[in-house]
Length: 242
Ligand code: ADP
Ligand code: MG
Image (cartoon, rainbow, N blue to C red):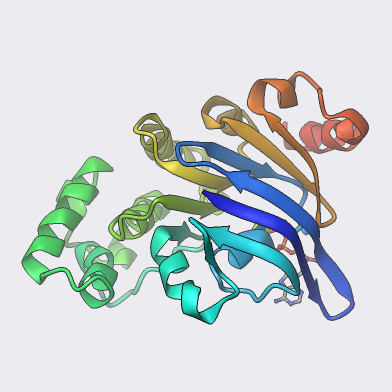
């Protein structure tokens, strides 16, 4: 499981994460909602070791992301897909997907390539495997991004607003892939503004407000308005999103 306890993070004098406690169990889809600037991306970046914590603890399967001796093991267990399509422009889709498995996991090239082609096929890109990023639509690029993460066979998939730069049609293409992954039991931490989609795939909803985790509820209870003191804030957020 992913476990966060009392996580603190500041940039200069701005406290961006303030005592975050969160558990993500294997098999869960946990969606993180909250206004822009509430700390969602910073929390993801702390989970994958891209930001140093100022206080508290994050462990991934008991490996401490703040411990240099544990970081490699922690990182092996999760893979992140970001908002921007950060594919290598000079590499084809299949080359982008095989790069880390070959270099990091030391998988033989032929095997990595056949696995990558199977992954690309599973997201409807079998025929585009040899295309360069510039020859792909935004939705196709983001599907390659998902394949690149999955090629590392992560136990946890971290997704940070991966559809927010896409038009509605391309968003639907990408969300369909996530729904497919959720059905096969992939554990996901899903930062999104796609509220209705989050509602359909999440086991739990977490709501961040100004760096504090103010609600952590099963999805049906979140949407039933069981957020207690945070309800007014959540209602305001949801009304802006819909
Ligand atoms: P969200 O993803 O919820 O929109 P972020 O985690 O990106 O929020 O940002 C939370 C706050 O931290 C924002 O006020 C943002 O400006 C600030 N912030 C994020 N990254 C940095 C950074 N590297 N340096 C300074 N401030 C940052
Ligand atoms: Mg963000």
